[in-house]
Image 1: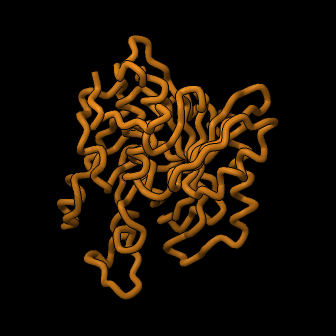
Image 2 (image 1 turned 30 degrees about the vertical axis):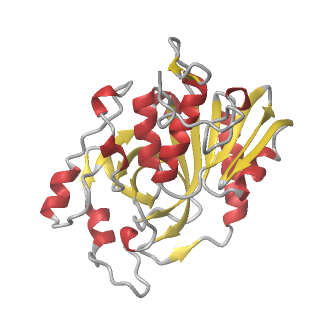
Amino acid sequence: MLANSELILNPDGSIYHLNLLPEDIASKIILVGDPDRVESVSNLFDSVRIKKQKREFIAHTGDINGKEVTVISTGIGTDNIDIVLNELDALVNIDLANREVKKTLTTLEIVRVGTSGSIQSNIDVDTFLVSAYGIGMDGTMNAYDYDNRADEQEINLDFSDFLFEAEIDLCLPYCFGAHTDMLTKFSELNKGITLTHNGFYAPQGRQLRAERAYPDYIDTMAGFKTKYGKITNFEMETSTIYGLSSVLGHKAISLNLILANRPKGQFSVKYKEKMEELIHIALDRI
């Protein structure tokens, strides 16, 4: 039995942070970072049966084209992803009343629809890019036992050796891939290797007033080559979505709208219409 301090429930029996009950969610999940984007997605549903919110976590569940879908906002960062993925899994795979893991487990389909910045000059703003792999510079998955993962999605890119040679002393990196079934659903989109960070400014090579420890960080990361290709983009959630989905047995994929081209210093001027287009693609394929 899971202790009260480990599986935390609200007085109504809902899971602590998300404020959701098991019957509130579908097995098909759209993750968005921006809470305002939840309604942009659910407005496309044929009907909506659930609307709940706690803190930055807003969840809407409804039907579209005969499929039930839940869209939920995560906020920014892998720390929030750690909460959202574990609590979504608890809703379907733990008997909350008895505080025990179910004997028969449910697999969720999880699609992140988010924004990102390209570090390769040939990947233009407004491009749609699927993260075939997510490399974590955030450290979140280092708290989990990879040997207990439900599949073989963990990838060795020799990235640790590369960072050592480049004299970049950050956290121990990790890498997981998108689920192959989900990659097939979005096969027509560009694919890349996404680097996930635990911050937006210096961790991603930006500088306002606080100086960066690694001024050449973007160029260094852009130059790293693997047998799967080069690192294509930076963002703040994908690695933990892939890592926890692998450990927990869910099928995940991350869809990125490229808002910025970092080498060229460019930023999208038609973000809203391109994001709406990507949302349509996600809902059509999930």
